[in-house]
Length: 110
Image 1: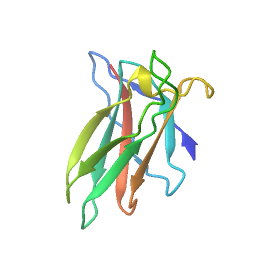
Image 2 (image 1 turned 90 degrees about the horizontal axis):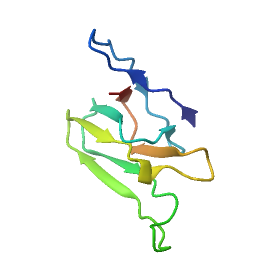
Image 3 (image 1 turned 180 degrees about the vertical axis):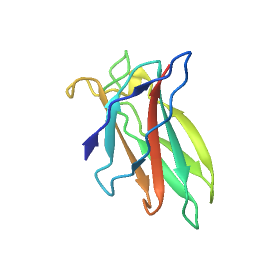
C-alpha cells in the first residue's frame, strides 16, 4: 500500500503524475474537500474502485464503503471527501481498484 501526496492544481496548470494502482491493499491519500483522484481504466474490461468508509457518522453508525464502476477504457474523477478519512490513520482514505491491470491514477488538489 502506497500513500500518495496530492499535486497542487494551480492557475499555471499541472502535468499530472500517474501511478499504477496497488493490487489488493490499495493506495492512500489525505481526505479533504479539495482532493480528487483521476482514474484511467486502460484494461480490456470494467473495473471497480472502492473507497473505504472508515469512521462513523455523526450519530455513531459505521460509514459504508463507496463503490465506483468504470467501464472499459473509461476515466473518472473521484472526490476524496473528508468523511472518507480514517480518524485513526491521520485522516487518510484508502481506495482499491480491482482488477488493477493497466489501471493508473493521479491525485490532485484544487
